[in-house]
Length: 162
Image (cartoon, rainbow, N blue to C red; front, top):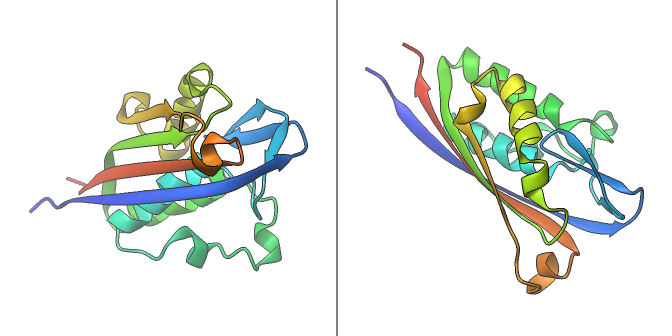
């Protein structure tokens, strides 16, 4: 019997003046700020990882890749995504689709959305059309709206492999 499961992921990272670039969806984006994080701080990928981990009943990203370990410092979040994909496959599941909302005042997500989808699809070995990313702003409300943070919500649907 086929099982269908879903998982929800969420991540938020502070922004500070910095290197002039951030990483979202595995894509380097020029920006006057940088993400404050132990790894590369890819908020989008972190939320996706947590959504998949939730769907397969595994601990969250913070437990699997603690920020207290030196080996995770500056690490690409795509490594976390690859590990999660391998775990998903070992448990005999496959991704049906992933839907994300990336909330930020800047950068404009639509410019980078297709490149992000392609990078994530390649890592997860799924068709690009199975990944949706929507960009939203907070209309200058709260820390995200003031440009002090980026947050992301993700939902993953998975099923047992046939």
